[in-house]
Image (cartoon, rainbow, N blue to C red; front, side):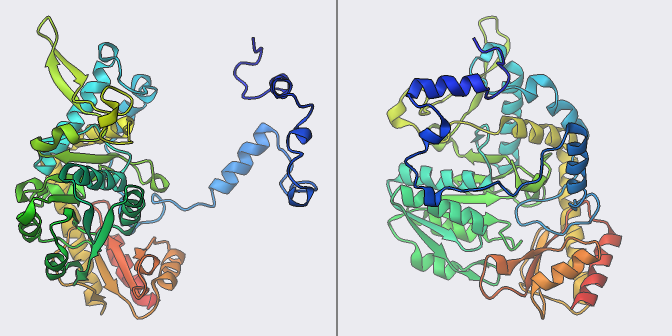
Length: 448
């Protein structure tokens, strides 16, 4: 029996393990490693501090960071600063949610199951789809799983994806496709949107699915009607990755005939928090409901006629029908999904529409303010809350100057695309004020 059960390792633990494998010391354990590759000498680290001094030092280091509470941020590209109702944290930090792992036993997990069910329901209402799962790890994971599902369902090996999809999501897709021996074909971009002529030329009988983003990575709004016409000409799946907040204004992909709608629920109740964790959503038509990866929570009644919630339609690798499991992903972001559900409930249907309208109106105001200063937009099409501006010098330099003036600038597109080093992707959410937008315009004028 370990007398120090809450300590990860004691000297006695170490001795017992060494005795078990038959060696006298740690040096003997690693004696097969040549001396020339072993580190010799003291590590160049600061001496250990006592608790009070350590806390002060960590606070000093943390104080060197800049956050979006101190600096107005125009950085988006998949992670956005939005209004989060205070009730979200009050609910999430309740111990029954905060410490819950997974609702395998419905009789003791009704609260968590209901929270997930409400999340699924609201995602369906936003996307115009028949059903949604309990969530995925994040948006790129959801997009990739949608492509894998389509290839499995259609028995085809080719994935067509627009170059206007988030480049990081595209890399995740390529990595997964390589493991499945699938072919990823990229569709060219034209004026910030998917080139429909290129899509028509590359579409073949081997195409399992066509993937577009709405609004896309450049903030532009894709022509989903045209994408649908091409995609469904030969029984391929239409997959749309969408910012769920934008669907408070834009026509949902489900009404365009999308087979799968995926995305990241981060805009609802999930802070930017250094890029994660997030909460991917995954919504499909009824015909695909038995192919959906991850968990599905269903509503039923018990033997007394009372409403209850259960995990349903499962064909996961750790359950029954292992050989027909739909995905390698067997978990979900339950806590973040709950946070998104609480946020959507608190904001409400009309509040969500107003929030989306403010994003669009403020982004368009920012674009006009920059045009008035002589800056030129890179694209001419309609957009939601992000747009691209051209500069005469590299964005990396401009962002440094903005930072010195207390502003977090937009994304340097040169980070992902060669030849776009002078283009900045700016995001304007409902939290940005007129004064902050005007300050950005003035600061950019001085930085150029």
